[in-house]
Length: 111
Length: 115
Image (cartoon, rainbow over all chains, first blue to last red; front, side):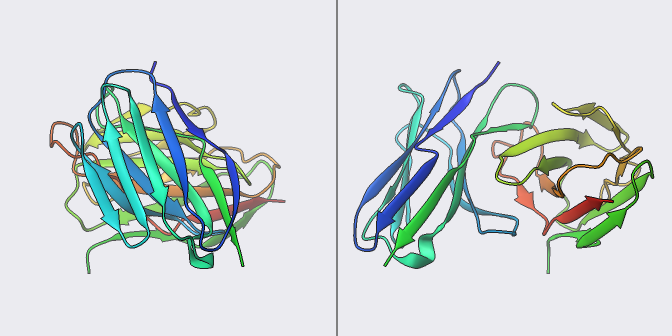
């Protein structure tokens, strides 16, 4: 059974600082997705990582995938308040088209 | 505009009533999914469908039913709704298995409160 773990689950950081969210998974997969959820809202797709070594960047966020380590990272550079949200990673397993989601990381960026 | 629509946005029902949540997509996706999100929690998969007229149970299928008679539509019925904190129901779709990319696109969600 595929398990996906994110850490930390809660992250409070100051504006201007850098930090990394980690997503570990338990079985072989080379496809991983990052989503953002604002309070009371649905999930919005951030990054699609489809191969080992894939790196994607959008603004202050950068995501990478290491399939050998079964690890993806979401790096935040010079955080701003607008990045406050919950971030989920999801891994493409072997059971048809379903994804397995991590528990989510609730990020709060303080002025 | 292509996308996924869910209706209604807010839904109130009395305990023990059945309630059906609507999900429609015009992305021409083969696969569709239903998730439940409780307050402060992650997503739990209820049912998913990889093709018309076929669907599979997810991790919390008990107390729910679905149908997939059309590619565009995947309604979810909550049978005999139980009183719990309001839950957020999210519908999603993707290209489908074997397409090389299973990125899921989410609808706006329906918040169900059982009184």
